[in-house]
Length: 156
Image 1 (cartoon, rainbow, N blue to C red):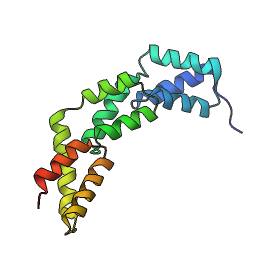
Image 2: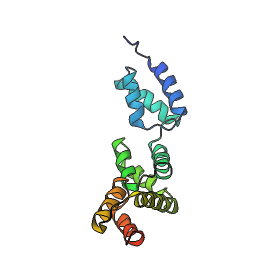
Image 3: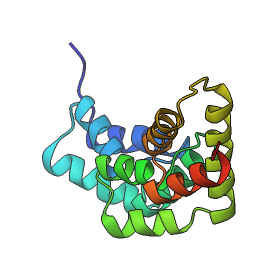
């Protein structure tokens, strides 16, 4: 059986964990629950972490959005869903998505869509178009932008 942590031990461990990478409130709460800390003690630890700057949902959302857009090639829709699933508020999600560079975002979409189009062997224009649109939307890009890309670049 695991030994439960005291609030001061949990604060020390959580601070060390948060200093290694950006964490959101939901992730830290889950970690505290796993360590057997709940209720008022967990709330006090969360307040202390937020006051010391270890946990900031807006900072986390901005870092998450930029990383997923640049490194993973995710679209804004997919990023927004992922952030909301983590319990990030709508205002922070909007601000994080506004921080994603439009030129990098467009280049990322173009790169992903071009790679998919080159890889496809579909001859039927309608089916090819549908597959490309489905791919782009599944990556989290806006339907309108994906549809425009397909019309401009894959007009066969």
